[in-house]
Length: 216
Image 1 (tube, rainbow, N blue to C red):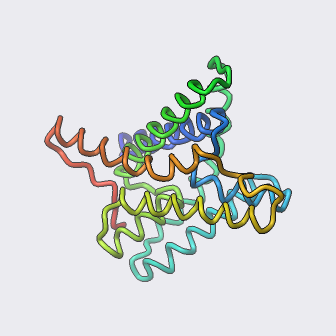
Image 2 (cartoon, rainbow, N blue to C red):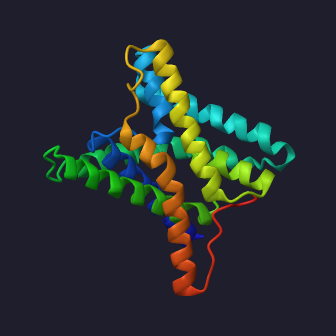
């Protein structure tokens, strides 16, 4: 159990580092953060509040998708929201010490690091089977219901978040690209792809397959 908790916490922190690198890269927020940021821009409400409201809605969506398969332990995702928010603040503080000159190659490097850390964080914390972040929990719920590959659903889910952010900012904000940028679009497709490659590489090196989808 201790190993599972450690894997869970480490995975969340890796994902928080991924978010921090994406913010500092100046190329756009991560797809899953784009909706919360759009809401913050449109309503002038603190992003911490909009993040909680958005994640809470994702938990409700999981309940609708899973129905009788929705286990009470998924309610722990509310705790994850608080923990992940704290880790994101810490990660932003850490990344602030890394030299960054806003050059094109540095922006691209930070984006690549962001994508890798986000995917690797998912790979580490999801198999711990404690409680996913609401975003990944939604992807997991769809995978459980449909039997489709988690990584493929992740790509489609992130792409949907980006499109919704564009629509929201286009209709209710002064700039359609207020919450997203080129890096957001790239992350939408490559986080899921990178997760698949990490999983395949792990299976090739160890002979063991990690299942990121938990039925409980």
